[in-house]
Image (tube, rainbow, N blue to C red; front, side, top):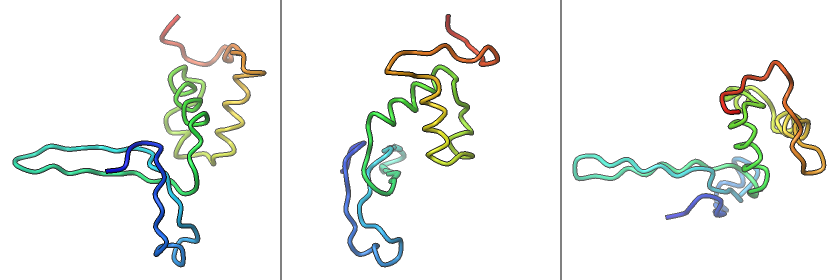
Length: 102
């Protein structure tokens, strides 16, 4: 069973989707009556753990919204994250950003 951030290669799908390397974004197990269902979310290409953790941090601090992940392209999310961090230092979010933790 693959774990998060591991790489999987499906050479037989390359002709259909154009790539054959995927990484595991999320694994979910659901236990029912005498059965276990496992769902694995894959992303194309290679994993960038630093980017994924930076994305989680931006969500946690509400520098970006949850729906931004679905509504924006990856490069737009990356630019948003970079705007809130500069030279690896935290930059205060804009005054209109909601904050639950002080």
